[in-house]
Image 1 (cartoon, rainbow, N blue to C red):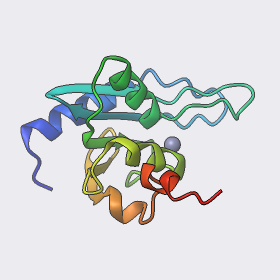
Image 2 (cartoon, protein in one colour):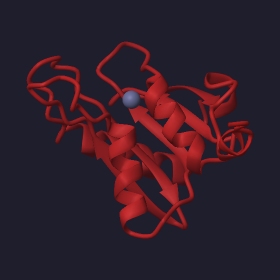
Image 3 (cartoon, rainbow, N blue to C red):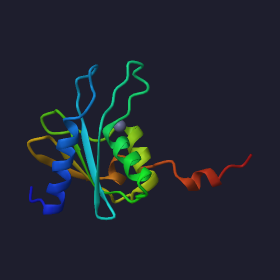
Length: 138
Ligand SMILES: [Zn+2]
């Protein structure tokens, strides 16, 4: 797969973040990074003994960007410890849909290679959006 220097840079940051993952329970370390307004934001998964309080790498990166005033999400790279990479979970896709264009490119990667690319709209075909809140009848 031919990759632009920008994607390679985002991927490197995702791989770096993966190393900081706190995953003592699943041992499944994830790193994620994306571009926003020309800056790169990265996150890692942070597990919790309660399990339910665990935060994925993708949402960690989103919170980081938002807390620094950046709401745009472009070119998300997700790095997992698998053979061919893995997509974000449904919860993360929903959070991404709040800020990213449906055409957001999601790059599925490992620390060794970027294996594929898929659009947000193809992973989450019908997100719940702001407009759905406006449709309430009672
Ligand atoms: Zn997730």
